[in-house]
Image (cartoon, rainbow, N blue to C red):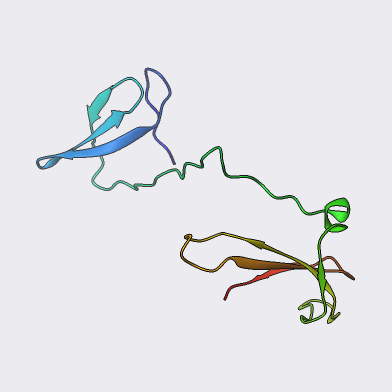
Length: 111
């Protein structure tokens, strides 16, 4: 449950000042002392404009290379399309993704 600002509808975030907890709106600055003894704190993950969504479908796999060195975990077929994506920090190896040629099952492997 997210608490919303009564003025502007923005999310209220908790802020501790001394021994008191206040709910503060980051948009308009509204603040009120919290009457609750416990608060759930969560944060939203912000994505940059450089990040992209990759959609794999029948048409997009036609240009991908095929390997015969893996076995599909769903149907047991030994051919799969493969591609690499950097899903973790730059100093770590990229993640390998596979898509079974026969059943279309997609899985990933880390080094």
